[in-house]
Figure 1 (cartoon, rainbow over the protein chains, first blue to last red):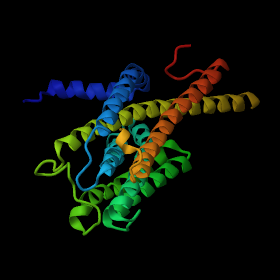
Figure 2 (cartoon, each protein chain N blue to C red):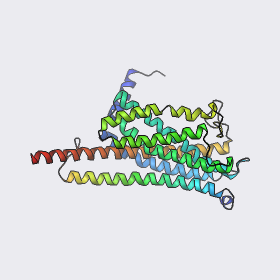
Figure 3 (cartoon, chains in turn yellow, cyan):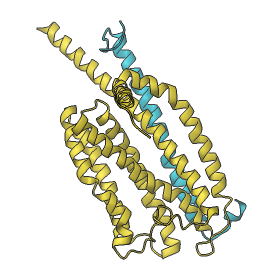
Figure 4 (cartoon, helix red, strand yellow):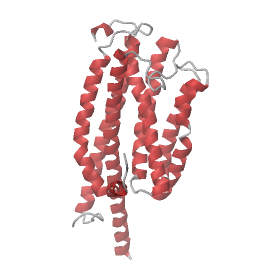
Length: 258
Length: 57
């Protein structure tokens, strides 16, 4: 397939159009309810499939924890990749919505990371006989939560938006080194955590009766993240508009007093 | 579903799904409440005579 200059120009125009907050807010208004509906449907089907699977021959009924643990972990890393795109948008293209996108993804990334850690612990105790071990996978994943919390604190601590955007973007890009460490830690180090069983070069190692519910639940988590992220971006744009108006009000009050 | 109850692993499975539901629902509620709060604040500011750059007066 040949990508023409006209195609590229149209794509660039589309991105530029979305850089306009008013157009972006209109788009969010248009897609948010269909997305929310699709999320609810995916969760309904995913939960039904999750509780309809047979017991695993080794893990018994605890295999059902996989259907919330694995999607949480995938979305924790997915949210970070969204933040990396946002950071590149801030530093390279200076896209007006890039910082909004990165900043809005952080709380959900932290929530998914927290869920990954807690559900992993709840799965580990009956299967491994321990809630926690300081192995490479678990520790690097805990580091991801610390990075998320640090970034949220950084964004809140610096008042000046352009400065906080640039600083956070640099930290996001530095912290991105942790993502391949999480992914490959089970191959590089001897860990209690099992190696990858879905995203593998030679295809998934999971039996179809476990793989399909997992994929449907992963789709539900992805749809939920997209819906929440768009809604949070809308909230962040409104917050910035409020801030602009408050500054305008403060300036006119000072002008009136002088 | 009924086979879950009475199993020795019930606590671990119920806690995993319960905590996941609590965190995800809290996130949804947080986003909705934040949106309402911002819209209310913005409306009040606009009612006081201030206008956004792109807004029609």
